[in-house]
Length: 59
Image 1 (cartoon, rainbow, N blue to C red):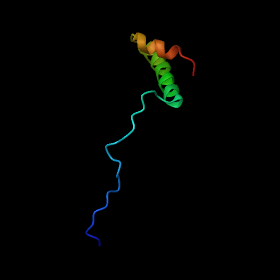
Image 2: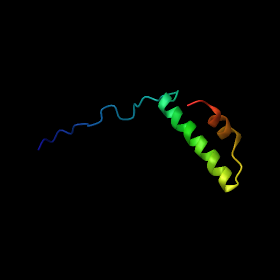
Image 3: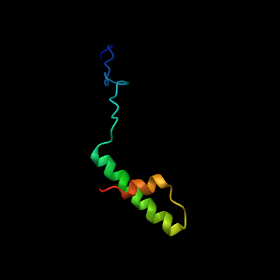
Image 4: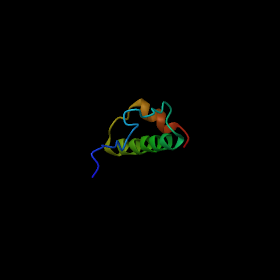
């Protein structure tokens, strides 16, 4: 066994931050907002405006 430690993740801590969500991520968020609209309606809860606005976007 070698005494030299090898770093399996040499780039750890230097992750790229994506400022704009991918289209796939955006579709997931839109569908989640639509699901929340339905769920809130069935439970008699008030849905926040930002969720309503997101749910209006085309998929």
